[in-house]
Length: 343
Image (cartoon, rainbow, N blue to C red):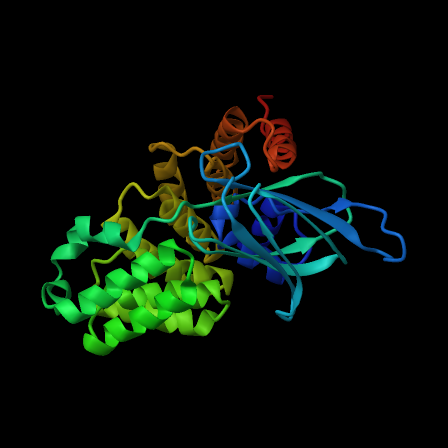
């Protein structure tokens, strides 16, 4: 029942793609379907039009990003580097993967299904990147592993940061490898290497390096987020859930973590937990995360509480009346309101 409601929530046709997309709420569940476009000599191809924005914004991102479209086997179909936030791919219907990388954003990964229904431009929300140097001002900076960093390693890490800022990623990798060579417990450098791996599409290496950073410094929040996102993308909800819960302990107002753990718990059939965490999102500033109300609504329905679900569908429509899931929310609202109207 829970999995079928996830499918309804996302309007998707491929279960494998559906579950993975649920795992990455930075997309705000807007990938549903691509617009049909007639392409001479390319039978059954459709136009996939994307607008990339940062969370909480409505205008296209005006910074360089590389957008890669892959098929279900991970084979690259097309790559575009743009500075205006708008991309268009022509592709056949089916399961696709999308990665978006850039020096100014968190690495983005999602898997989704392209259908033939025309829905126009789709919006993809990405998170602004927090520089690794910012971590020095967080509570994690007092971790013992950071108190022992030798100057030689620190200098290499800082050189790597400067290279990253200049988008010289191979140089950044060189310096961060040297940093962990000088000091094997350098959590920030391991995380940086994980970021580079993710940018290069090496998910397994990224997973290893993020886990290394977590093991060295359990109070370091960023690798929890990155590793959880990887696991959600692989439909490993049971593995992602504890990482997300730990991230929430470290960052109680992180609406991405709260939304993501609610989806994971819904997929795992933990409806009460999904409801609780989804409702915590509403208690915080949550521009771009109105979809949490749909997660709560579906969890309430799955728990046999349709009247409460009506309120959540209604709240979603108040916050995002023209959102990509608005039609589905209205249909659910009409269905439940009709079924449970006073007699």
